[in-house]
Length: 109
Image 1 (tube, one colour):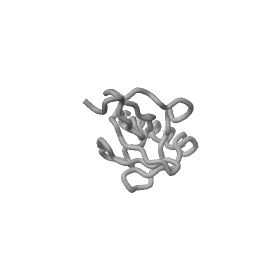
Image 2 (cartoon, rainbow, N blue to C red):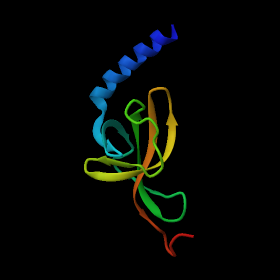
Image 3 (tube, rainbow, N blue to C red):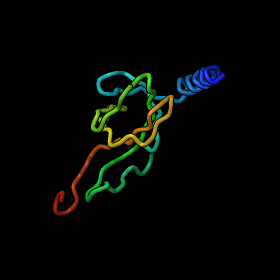
Image 4 (cartoon, rainbow, N blue to C red):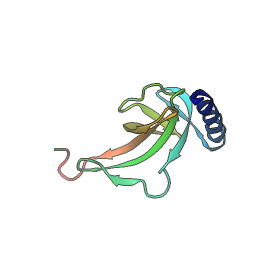
């Protein structure tokens, strides 16, 4: 029974993904991603001192088996790096990306 439910859910998610995802390159491979938090004000303070532009994506586990810190992701010609794995489920990874890291006054501590 669980296999049937997961099969149905996967088919539904695949249809949604086909309509909502954008093309990207993950570590040199073509993938499709759901891009979240990439509109408007993306500037947030970095965990340490300084600033960076951040956003998040979801990518299918079928496309990326094991994401890692600083993996490159290119979306619309802009290169981002994986900052962290925010969450995951049986279908996809939610990854926080960053670019334009800038140290604050006095540099890194």
